[in-house]
Image 1 (cartoon, rainbow, N blue to C red):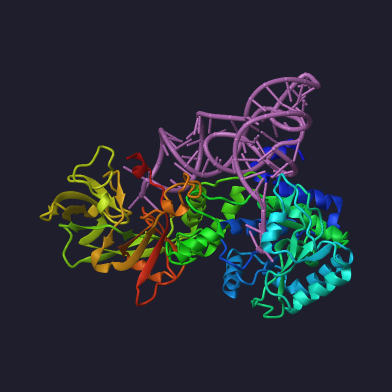
Image 2 (cartoon, rainbow, N blue to C red):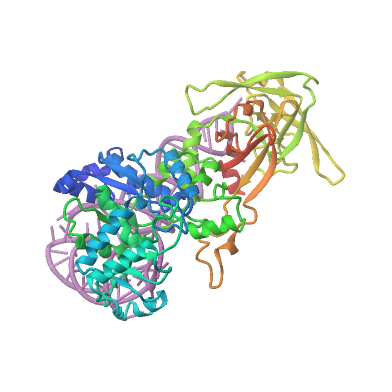
Length: 564
RNA sequence: UGACCGAUGGUGUAACGGUAGCACUACAGUUUUUGGAGCUGUCUGUCCAGGUUCGAAUCCUGGUCGGUCAACCA
């Protein structure tokens, strides 16, 4: 690699550590140069942005190196898993834009093969049936500093072990009565090598194998062997499995697997500021109704982000930008927000919408008159078409866009001041009307007909406002989302504090919005820019009865708000 | 206190013994019929102590700090 190449970003040649490993493997001719990855979710919850990173990584690596990626459900614990989750996960992976190698696999596809493997290990004297209770076993395991003690059942005969395993499978024993264990080393400094459990008895109905099995394999026993059976070359998982790698290797060795052998690599999972990422905690938020389901737009789930208005491209871009390494990290949500703004700025149609209205009356505009003004749908798109916006005497503008007694840097409307109404005319504020509480109810203005948008004018204004003609306005329910937590690391509070103590009570505000008629073209999921406000996505619940519903994806950057 | 892993600006991530770069954030300027977007620029960094070397973020030694591991979860 030439040093100079590294400096030119347009032909970026720097690789992350996984790409380096893969390139070395290809060079060395390992696995005949094949690259085959897999994404192995457990169907016990919905996918979140951390999974999205893993998906982009696994599929991205295969794409880059001309390889394949399997989608495999790690369904080894029937008590926690269901087809509801399977379906949702499939939809999310598809939505993110990735194509897995057909068919979809399940660890349960390998239950039969795994059973044969287990018999093989028993015959080699490398596995045994243990009658200890879970509690006894836990005590006997020792501590990281102290060796464990060997099970009294460790040296049963091959015949007895085979017979017992067969009877475990047939359901002759109660749950918890016996397990199959690998015979490794109770004194190992690595806890995972202290005769780990391979099979446990569960009289549970499995979503795919039904009642066929009464024993189910543990993760470590199922995973590496599934990788092997699928011809996986690079089995990529998160850091907490680092200590499992010797066990992963031990099983492959014990099964005498030498050719086409998968290798496990670990990377640091994604952490995002102002949210939580563990499935357990997300489940808690759902079950305890802090949010309205897994796809609540405040959730960091893929389905939540989708409903919030995030696009697949924005999530892929984000996954690219966060990078891949082995150190713990905390990504600032502002990076995620940057990615969706970048996408929507280029692609979202613009529309004017007033969310906190105050009435503005143009006194010198004829009553009953209206005109259609052309407006560009997306100024960032050179091929953008025009939309027509109705203008009339009575408008709504944003309450924040008017101040009776403004500071010097206020570029918006104030008594005696002039602003442009976007795509329309320059107006001057002449007067305000207030109610008995002192609240402004009407702003009276004069418009200048020769300043119509597109006309030459010498009149200069500092501010441009968005507006909606009251008579032509479409009403919509607008859901204003904010971050779900008030602190950047809700999981790292003081002693005795729970992540739920930091839930933001104002994470959702629902308001009525007034939009220009063009909004009627919206379809579910479509993202718009409400000019000067932010990006908003049509909610999937919008229907003729509820009317239009919009979710705020993210606000526009606002240097005015910041400067105050 | 055992094993494994890690440590580069505020946050991420490059640099593979030879000028510490890129992105986000923040700030400033420019521009603007979105206080948006764009463009330009600025600030801030190699955990510590030794050693090897002409030269160390990079190699070695020793510390410090952080993460993971004692489920019949994954």
